[in-house]
Image (cartoon, rainbow, N blue to C red; front, side, top):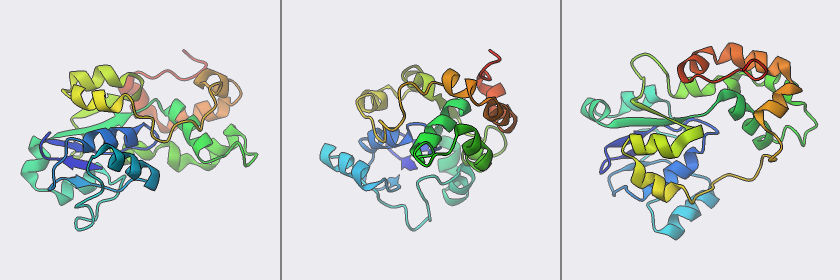
Length: 213
């Protein structure tokens, strides 16, 4: 999570969306009074090697990497919340769950993807709790993971994209063959569960349910 005063941007970090790369890039534009929450050590080292600002000013307000929009709204001055662009990144929930499966080593534990989905319902629906799609804590800009370059340019964040496009933080865990179509073809129950729990975001962003498109 970052509050970047020079860019007048509040970044709310959802999970498994490439948010760490966005944070590293946005850190380049931050000053000493900005709020920057900590990253994993290897990612903080990337910021340091590039000469960008590292974690700062996050402890007193009680912020964490995935502080929700509601928590940030309650902690910052009303004029900051109302006038800054509030940004997050959104990812197809069917794709995001596959990423979580490999990130949590479900495959190495011998757990099927179907079973992983059934046992981790909370992970499937976690991002709307962090960055609501409706209500008082709704954000201004939902950048789509699938088309970050276009959405960031349209949101006036092209300079951040120019820094971000060369970063690959936390990558390389998921096999290339683990496409949405291939994984859910073998796990129709998981597809139905994601469709049920993520109905709002599927409707909002026009995602297709695997096997029904």
